[in-house]
View: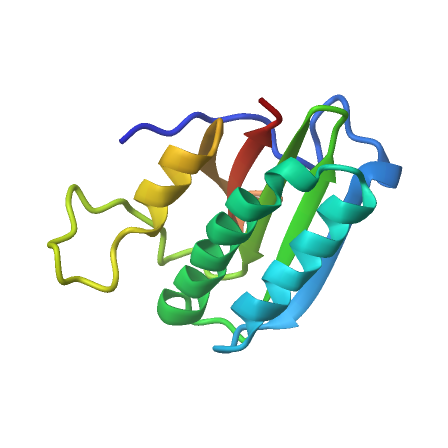
Length: 148
């Protein structure tokens, strides 16, 4: 599995506030469904229907990882829309517990496939640390989807 590092979606040179959407939500078991609805609606409204299915799978896994592993009360889902691609990120404020990919999940395992799926479905994905001055205050797991 490999990951690519791109500029943070909010600070990239092409950032335009009219193409950035954000959902703040509690880090609870029902938030994955809310995140899928938010991403689906955003991609429909911005005319990217071909990306909806893969985006929903990836954002659901990223949110589930935060809910299961990060020790936070809230998270945010960020969508940056470009003409032929989108970058979706899930941010949390737990700087210590960072995601890692399992080499191989066993056939009966219900967990451990999130980053593998993200790698297969996305054009690129990665993790950015969120900084406040010299201190890491969180992380952002992101993935980029492109129209084929």
